Length: 345
Image (cartoon, rainbow, N blue to C red; front, side, top):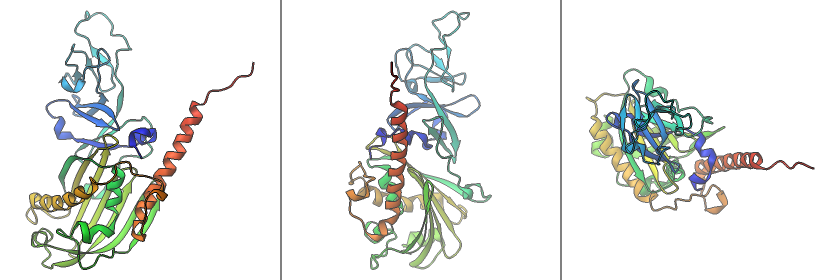
């Protein structure tokens, strides 16, 4: 599945950049092959336009923010969050700016400390709701923001794959003497998936400290949720009541590249476990996954007959079938809209 070839994928929300990165200047980002410029308006709200001035196609992201608008670095044309040109320095002040002086604007919002963008005016799903992020006393820890050379579908399948723990994560939490995956309860949704499992894990000394669990072996009660197409939450609850919820998005920049956005939510405090130590352990786990995932084919098939499977692959099979149905339904609809009407004369 080449993500840039399917228009329906433009109808979902994706986290694209930490909102803190927009404090001082506009920033570029490429989403599904679409070059964007992002900045903060005078109200502190994020805005997203196509990163091309309508005059001579200079990158607006190379400009500055002025009076809440993004100003082109070439001739100084300024655009507001709606994409309308608000100032042309070369025109007399009493001359009306033509309405054709505009740039395409996209839906943009802030949530969980990140800017989210949808390239369509008609999203198929709302922004993900993570109730744990709203619980007083819980803390949100930004973790990773980096490009990976693999498909978002591979990242999502890996997130629901209990069979790779003893192999890929042998140095972090995998129980090497038990390669058989934990059994899962799988609940398909209309657009998405939930999986519940009890997973035995190994806790190295640093993780025992992070979890306030003195035992080398323990279990995780896991609730995983897939948000179509490339986001998920992994809610881990330990026997002592500690919750460690990880949100991961593989935002599709291009067919080959996904921007990994990850943060975690915990119901403990900095005094219990420092954010630095938590990130360090999760970095080890993520790096183990990255090494393998970047070796896979980026053109991940949604046709389940194209690769071989085993019983524990069921979550990934459901993902592929849902995406295949989504692509088929909407591409047929697009073809029908594009068919010419024949008029008999």
